[in-house]
Image 1 (cartoon, rainbow, N blue to C red):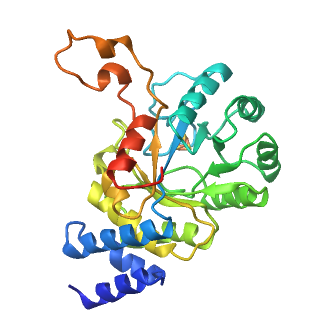
Image 2: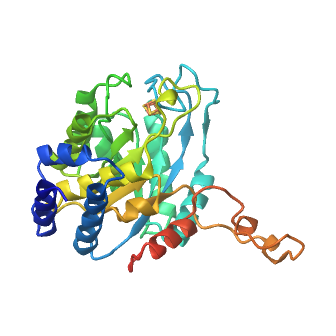
Image 3: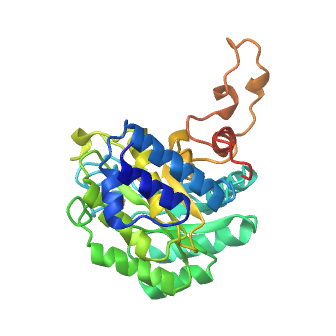
Length: 336
Ligand code: SF4
């Protein structure tokens, strides 16, 4: 075992957050090495203690869909090549989906829009939904770059937190400006809204230095959530050919984030996306569901089926709140 790594990990175990230089070093490790395994394991131990073994899951609803002129080179909705037609989810459908997330034990649910949207429509949706869903389900925003005043209006409508990130290679792989993304986060914080952050969208081509640079935005600014998201290769997108990082690599990045944010008192969540056991054994305590609690189908009692499969009653291939609870429970989280 490399002495330098041993020292960094022992210090982290006893509460010293890693430096940016150490993060670059740890991100340079071969993902299949013994050292990388020990890094993930150390982050797991430290996070379990730090967060009292609490595990959480959040839900998300894409409430507005259209082609997007930001044209991010990794995105399914990029104007340059997407085939999708614009659509929105109705208020009643949004509320019904929120209720299923609440039944399934989600901590909160994000209402996700495109980068450009009809803000008044979105604001009205948030205010209406907030009044009609269970109080204990947090309502979170995921929107484009908006002003301080708009964040204040969202807060008044019942939004308590929001996802936003200045992403890896922002301005290079996207047409958005890193400064504007950061300004939006500053506005959100000034309005008193909790900031949910991620290191994303991680691909195999990103260097340890680039990753550390982006991770440190969330180390230096007050986020309640940090974590990592692997880029899904969207067929037809310019970055499709770059492929996807492995779950070991994703876990390694989550572990570095966990050790870099050790002393951030405001942080409650370390997330791994897509949801995986590897991430939950690497310092993450949050995963995401795509839909709420599955509806029970009469087909569950249909003995003519060739053996039981959960798909008979799940009626979905999406990750449900049920799946999240199962994943967190089997990963050994005691408070979900
Ligand atoms: S800003 Fe968001 S929705 Fe628009 S292209 Fe980029 S990732 Fe897609």
